[in-house]
Image 1 (cartoon, rainbow, N blue to C red):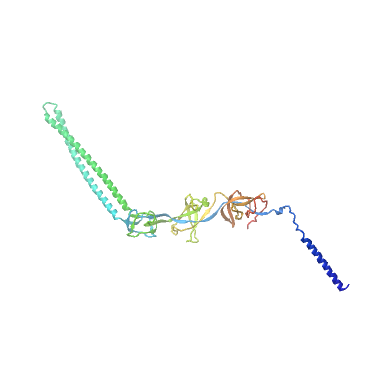
Image 2 (image 1 turned 120 degrees about the horizontal axis):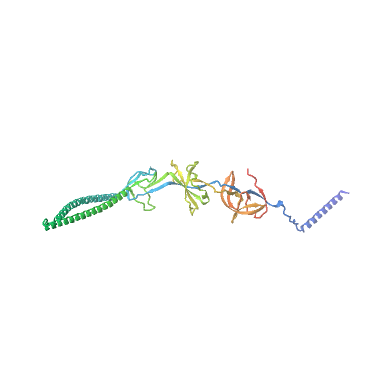
Length: 427
């Protein structure tokens, strides 16, 4: 066979092959694709869910709350009566003791009133002495009249007895003796009446004198108001008057006090405790706090007073701690950060935070029972960390040991059959 013949046969074979491929492609293009028939579900197709368990734990955490330090006692000192500052013995920052004289005022009109009251008392006392001496004179005359009456009575009785014998006593003499005795009795009655009147006068004068003495003492008490003394040990933190200033009693909230005295050796720490944490308040508990002005230092106070009522605006309960401050490093007005312990009276249920699914309508965890999912509504509580493991307190129909999905999501519907696989133990 020649080379030309071989080339023609090769070209013809290639043409037949191209034609066959083209027919095959046309036939395939005209047909629909084949759909695989559905297969029955197998155990391998049941989704696997990583699960963890609900834990029962004692809640033990600390939250940081703002607080305010206040003076244990805080008193604004005002004048009780109007007066001019005559002496002022203290200034801002002065340490004072209870009863110490702080300010002395001068009120000339009070001094005048006191002088007039004393003068009236002295005048009344003189009247009383005079009336009492008058009683003495009346009493002496009464006694003299009683003695004369006794003599006249004796004479009359003797003459009367003698007159029983005719001719012994003249009738005129007996009548004179009788009238003398009657006159003596009248004089005694008169002096008795005079003495009673004098005694009544003395009593009235004594009552008047007593009233005047009370008025004088009242004036003295008012003068005592001119002395302003410290009601307790403390520090003067405010001074608004100077010598010669006119001091007046408090008339409005805008009227500043003469002085402000605060007890700072012991302070009150007021902490607004949120409603969610009030169950952990224990009287007598020792609470720590820090202050920006003393970085790295921790102070403490003792829970002493609980208001037992929530502030309707902030939903917090004010709690007071007593803070000892003997060296006076702390001051009223400081704002510490209080390390407040939170606990529950009974153990709580805890889950990993990722197990809680939240929608616009509910919060829930997915519990697996007998290989089937169910949604359990929960309410979040406090958060805590234990050895690097974050946990969230939940309240709901859960029990310790319940298996729940580690990753809560509403895509895993309730009633779904799943394979529960325990989460790997954390290292």
